[in-house]
Image (cartoon, rainbow, N blue to C red; front, top):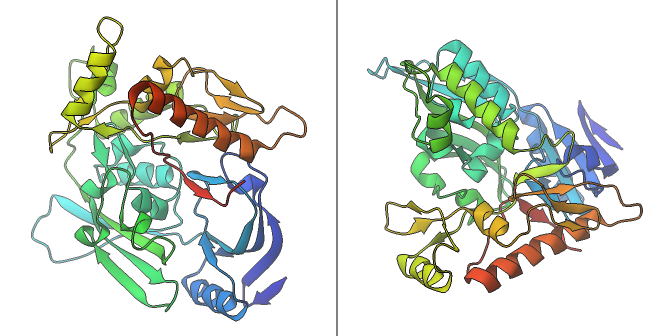
Length: 357
């Protein structure tokens, strides 16, 4: 162990409890960053010892395929602060979140404060910093809709970066932090613009159905409760059955590709849901594709596709001596091959994969 101030580096750290798939990977070096000045200490330690820097986040959207060689960072920067500014719009409020804040807890905190807009994103696992990397979205809302700016530290130089929304190059479950800035910076805080006036978004069919018998518009807190109920009914709790939520992104295809699929799979054999995008392309549910190929509930060694949710790969961890990391990647590749063969569509993995088997 190396220690400086309250900054501590552990060696040969088991990460099984720190990733929601419960994969038994280890980190050669590991530290928790609970104060901003710990970041500089961590970067200095990594440079002195010639180590790669690997931000881990909350471990809810990663697959640890092998042991990690480098300095793995667990960011615990906390704090939620209302920004006092001179903007004339009194109907909105800018709120800054430390990157280590639990996302769902942050959502509930804002709702209790009377700051609205995040209710549709309730119960998404992970921390606020990772939410920006992933551009999390659910039930018709994306983080990019509300993000004003964020701060980050450049891993190479240690410089503080201030990025506005447009700098982040947000896309569908995508951002600059998964592209040109991948592995190059550590997000320390994000600032979101929320509204003080309740304006709920019930555009998503499941939410409309949930409130179909209601005679009045639900409050944002009730929408949050509904989202939690719907998510719990569809997604297994990682604490009970290890998983990373949706393992594949919903593919976006051209009208020509959709036409070919319909031609090759004539009705009534196929009733493929489709969602028209602003650019004329069509988003189709990856879960529907997996289920059509009869892979829901499929087992591969100690892992499998969840019996009720075709997009969720789970680690049953019930086969002695099994290599669950290898098996989860083998299962994902088999699903991708099957969908490619059946529909000619490439399914893209949503979680970040570290290492290889």
